Each structure stands twice: as C-alpha cells, then as structure tokens.
Image 1: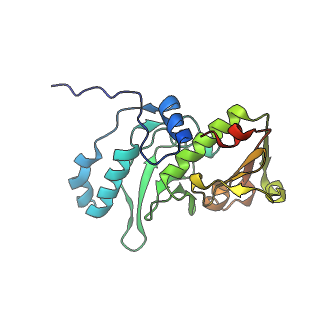
Image 2: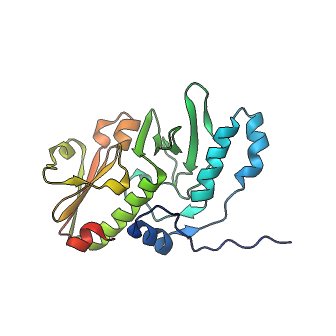
Image 3: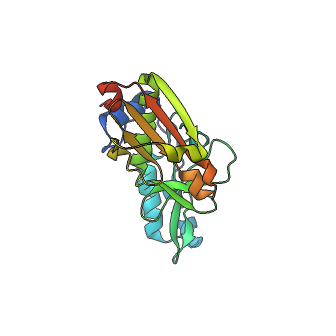
Length: 220
C-alpha cells in the first residue's frame, strides 16, 4: 500500500511565539524526510550511542522536513531542517547535523550536545540556545524587513561602534553568539557566528531595521 503523501503545509511546533508560528505556517513548506529511526541499528554499529540516536530522532520528529525562507545571513541557512548521523566522541560529546547547507560552505549547521543551534567550522559557534531561537530569529527578520522604513547593513569593525544604550535584548530568539536588540523605533540583529566559527573578526555583521511602530517592533 502506498504511503500517504506529506502535506506541504507545516504545523508549527508548540512553544513558538505567535509571530514565529504564523511565519512557519504561512511561509514554510513541509517536505518528505528520511526515516532516521530505521537507521538506528546501522548507526549503533557505527559507534553512535543509543541516547544520541534518540536525541537525533526527537529533533527530526519536531523539525525534520521543514523548509523555511532564506535567512538574511549564513548563506541563507539550512535548505531543509533535518537530523542526520550524529558526529563526535564520548569525550567531546555528540553533535547532530541540523540540515544541509544551500551552498558549498566551510561550516555546517549543527545541534550541540547541550541542544544549542549553531555552526561548526574551524570551531563551534552557538548561535541560539535552541532551534526554536533560530526559527524565532528568522521570523523576526522576515517581520522587520516587511515593516521597516529603512534597513541598514553594517559590517566589520563598524559594528563595534553601534550604540545599544536604551535597547533591550529580544529574549525569544534565545541569542548566544547572535543577538537581537529592540529599541524605541528600531530592531538590530547582530550576526557574530561566522566571525567566531571561522576565526574571522571582520565577518561580524549587523542589520538595523529603522522606522518601526509598536506593531513593527513586536508583531505578535
């Protein structure tokens, strides 16, 4: 008997803000994903602990097959979220691939042993404390682009001159290496992940979304 086709309309996982939920369900697409549970025996033979396979399966059950619009940085982010063979050792911990890159890149998107979402190049850069934070950041960027009257891109050393006095951190993005800041009429996204992961200080970038009203600053 043929399997039921996958509905292309995603259902947002619980725990997201209304803004992110609307973003996932209106702008995302759900595609077919591999059944990584069927790979358990092969992965165990490969030396991956059962607990790490369970963690990969849990990530894939929640996020696997979700294709979101391109991110404004990191060469647009993963093409489709989804777990794959965990990488690591008992000493260093195990890292779960979070989705294939859209282009050939010097780093990959990973989930850390403690659940952080980030990029792994020359070194690890935890962008957000969870995958939810990554999705929230995509939703906020999409919202800000739609409502901002001005968008300013700042790169390199000039980012350090940004004055964040009077701004507050946007907590829902669970920012670590990357952060978002909310002011009285603007939002600022700071992207430091490539600078950390690739040991390239000039890779820092900021996007300033100006001219926002109350709805533009929050959007749900």
